[in-house]
Image (cartoon, rainbow, N blue to C red):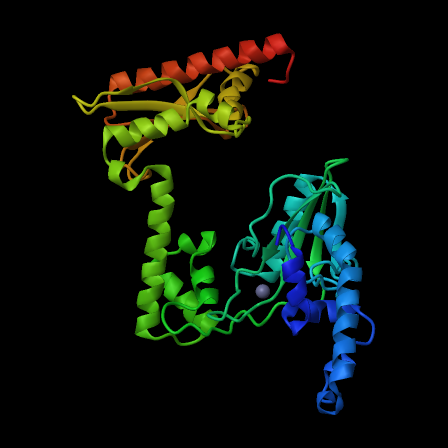
Length: 391
Ligand SMILES: [Zn+2]
């Protein structure tokens, strides 16, 4: 309705929707439309039509003005929009911790997850996709819900809200009021493993257990379980294990030099630094790794800054440097030998310096890993010495 001519205005008293909308605002015309029409004579009806026309003209100006403001949505309804009602955030969320650093917030959330979610490790993501950045009030918010949500589990309504404040960069954690956890052991799943059992048998400590021991633990914890459930437990654990392995080397690249090269590239010092995950305890590839796809020979040395410095620290005390080296089979995913490089202090305690990955335990491998670790350690000591940092 961008332009409203007089012809259209003439139709307005026919009881159409425009007239109905205007009647609502006009004075006392609704009553005339009631069931009393039979008693009215023609004269009265004519008078009413004229009156409506007058009212219509009186509203014409209003209409034109309103059209300027809202070019659509006729008739104009005076009722307040539902979305216009302000809902106070206060009183709906109970603060757990307010205005703390990100580290304190993360630690608190881990504690809450451990206590409330038992075997599940973290809170789920929010119902709504969070908008990025800060809103007009200078906060960025995200809602986290209990992973035992949905009709398949126990419809747990528990909700947390994380708020980041723009002005001081602090964080606040709140809990939805009146939404306690449901009984997580209830399962409405029609097929598959109940979530509380699935979470329990795939926790990091349970993943380390051998199958027979795990079966015993499950029976102690959940009572008797059927053969089907035991099969489901096995497959859930297998899937989880495969997922973890795929994160290290993609499945299609497994047992190939390409996959190994991928791992080496992803764990070089430069790659880890650019990813922002490098620290004194981050394992990275030291020196130049040898990956020969033709001969199938592989030698990679890797360590962390802190472990490398063990070699230097040992040399600072009366004893001459003593190195211990040994290889272990069947430790790594790709099946290579794992070579441990270490030293012993005055109190005869062993300290690891670094590790080597190799395809064969020969002289070249030993010297290559030793050279890589030694060079990296010397570089590190020189760098830290020049920067005046602790060694
Ligand atoms: Zn819950």
